[in-house]
Image (tube, rainbow, N blue to C red; front, top):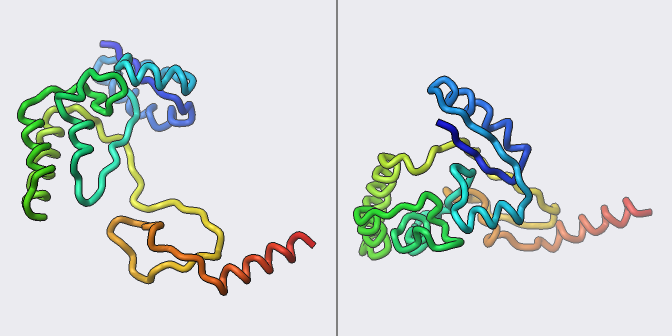
Amino acid sequence: MEIEFLMVQPAFERILQPFRAQLERLGARLEIRSIDAAQYKERLDNFDFDMVVSSFGQSRSPGNEQRNYWGSAAAGIPGSSNLAGIKSPVIDALVEEIIYAGTRAELVTASRVLDRVLRHGHYVIPNWHITYDRVAWWDRFGQPDIVSDDGIVLDTWWIDSGRDAALKERIGADND
């Protein structure tokens, strides 16, 4: 068995090396191919790949985006996010349950069931994640003292006039 892993970021190859080693233990050969961004987009849009690195952005209230990620109607449509080409009436029904959930409890239950069905189908191989947010900012913003379960929520920041003035003073002093 030979698999081509298509990527656009050569630096990510170091993350894939352990995966390659594990596949070799199973008798499979993994070829890692880096290509330019335009070629990568074209190949993704036309599903011309074996494997790629991707992410499926989620909120705490999943909804319509699930149709594009996992729904049968999106499979095979150039440019869709159903990269695995999933066509499953069971998954379609679960996505609709998520979208039309009447309560938070129904939404959470339907989301968990969809997650289990997707994991059972082995459509995605979890690779890596970080458990924190990385953000760089000018020290001119005020932020709420409460930390959200969603991580850093930039919509809740504001320009703090005192910090803004102090920053401008420091920048001016650095330029003298």
